[in-house]
Image (cartoon, rainbow, N blue to C red):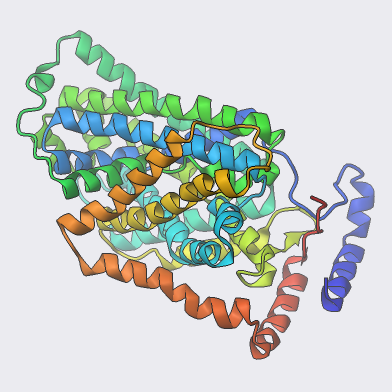
Length: 493
């Protein structure tokens, strides 16, 4: 730790000394604390995965498959793929107990360059754009009841989305415990709407509304690229199965709670997603579902009648809970990348009073604000998924590589090697199939942006040019004094 950081730490800790002497239970070490237990872990997985995806993706999955039968098959297979991926990440997370998701695993398996490219693409584009999409979805559903019969104004949606981002980042910067409580509350709230839709569908099925499932594979339109795009949208709804790996350092007893949270949370989500889609088809034909502006709202209008307002309200709860979970975990990626010197150093600093990575969370919220731009959500999902599955495949390939290059590493969980090999092959298919079937320049631009990180990596990270350090040092000191943050203490391995 350099002299400036020592002085800053001492000054800030002196200012906070009176408060810490009163609060005798306040931890004295400047590191993230282990405050996430099994219930919070399951809640984080369920709460993050069940967000806007299940209310947005059904139309796109159906559009790319052409019929009810293959649509439901895709949803089930997406659940299996997510479970396999989560098991791979469970082995990685208990083998390398560091926060940051794919980042520390790529660093351990392949070195700093792939890890940096992942952090570059994730911190600047993938995570904040996903955050923005989810908050925009929240804003659309939350504002819908106030504009019956018409589309809410764009300015209202954008302002409401910005307010959601500001609120969520503030909560996560203030307290890990408060963010966990908020996550638990919205997870419980979203399960209410899930149960309402599922129970309504079961009742309708019992009453004989099964005509949409007769000859359910008739009209199927299957192409390699179409299936790939259908998987993109289905897997978008399941995205979040790796979220606990971003906060491994904050999980109580990660060897037990990390895999157990996965094995409890994801099967619950698979069952819920299948039953929700079946419920949709009990009241809508395939054509009606494709024409619906908002599938869940249409379902509520036809089934719940005077209580239809419940649907947009609880869908808004669902999306805001998903956004909170995304912020909670993505801020940790920025924190870990800054700690390793792959992002601005102050992004790895921790609040003295609150022991949260508040600079990383604040940065994440600011970049998320930038992405509140009118755009086609389905297109964004396609390109987001394309980039994400490049790194999912590379990370799981790292698991296979480390089985041979790091045989002596402790592995509390060791899954059959056929699972990661299958996941690597699936990742290759998901990346290549849409390009081969319908090549678009946007996919090339996505790859070029990821590789453009090398232009930043070599001068600023690898060679550490002096003029860059002269610019960042006063910024770092200003942030330290403004936000009362200090570098994390180095923990013994």
